[in-house]
Image 1 (cartoon, rainbow, N blue to C red):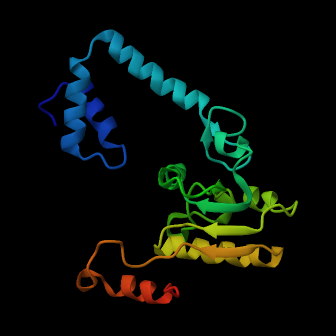
Image 2: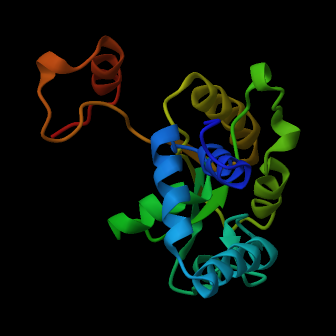
Length: 199
């Protein structure tokens, strides 16, 4: 990296600090930025600043929006009796791509992870509990990832929510469609058996 001028080195380091960007990709992006015109660079930086300044949490579901309430929460055709709880805003986007789920969402913005110093108070849990007060919500689907932290968060939420009289369900996990059983690991097979459904 010392072969590069200091501003270029800093630019590469900034790109490399982004999730999923390795050093080679960071270098490629940095060199591409240098090929842009000054107007294009100014527009790019303006767009970054504008997104950072104008995007905030929805007052209801905590998803990202530039309005007080996001378009999903504002949609009267969405089923308000079911809430799908996810870790991050990008999980909402993944569910929306299926075009099958018509309920509402709640974004936690993370998972309980004592090793990383993240407890329930750092997540958007109190906002979720507030949404259950008027009796509209009948079911909460816990859609956290099947990791240690995801399972721990789902169990914690389940214990909090069940006494409130709502149905609490968990996403089914198991064998992906189109895959072969011989290549599935033990935990995937166990979850597939545990979550089997009648035909």
